[in-house]
Length: 204
Image (cartoon, rainbow, N blue to C red; front, side, top):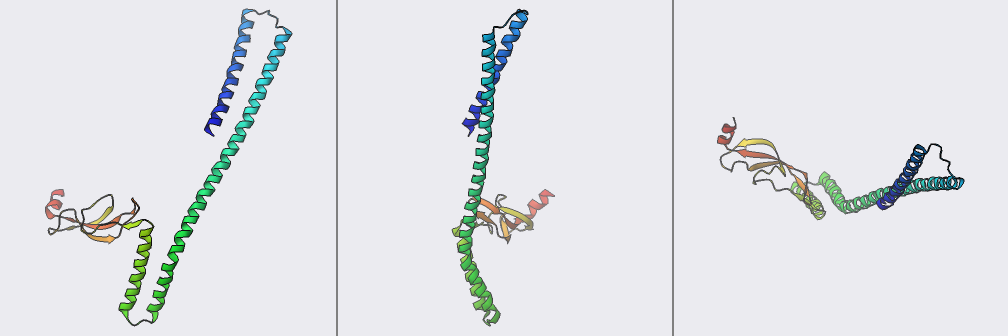
């Protein structure tokens, strides 16, 4: 597409250059010889050249319109294909998610009549494990946070707690889990971070 547009632009530039040279040539002839008489044959040639240039210019305009229309159609077609691919990926993921939803609904129905709390809890834990397994297979991973040094790339500190029994700057509590999709953080872990009293006093 770029080569076509460059070709059209180049031809248009050549047309403009030739037209400017004609004007310059005859302006100079008139300046040098005010009473010069131009031969009829030369007039005919000039007229033919002007018409040829006008035709070429019109052809270039039409070609540019066609190329622009082709490019617009290509852009719309590409956008539609992207949307179809995204819809297909979403549909496939939802299809995988449906069994998890079925088991969750069964667990809810069982909880309404169950008298064994431990069994209800076990059923919910099984559904949670099934969901986590599905998400991991799609590339989602939970961010390690508890007991590790604070990492601003994957953690977000919501509070600080003075502690002497753990290293300064260590995460002591995860307030909300964080997640990565493949190698990209989609939600940082919200954490509480340890700070030694001496470090806190130094900052004051």
